[in-house]
Length: 80
Image (cartoon, rainbow, N blue to C red):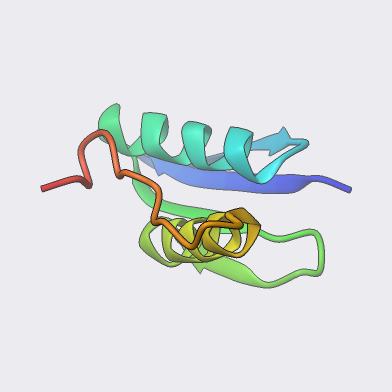
């Protein structure tokens, strides 16, 4: 099971495989930070998400894992 992180650099497409949701989100944010366009993350089930959609799914999954119901802090460029 892996997540496929894709982006467009000038006129070519690039893709990276990541084994976890956290690694895929880190890579997607790094690609955005590097100025690449059309960054998407494809879930192992085949669903494709924009980086913001994937971040929302990631935070939702983290919420479900917290027994005290607290929300995780957003750190980085999307925190504002």
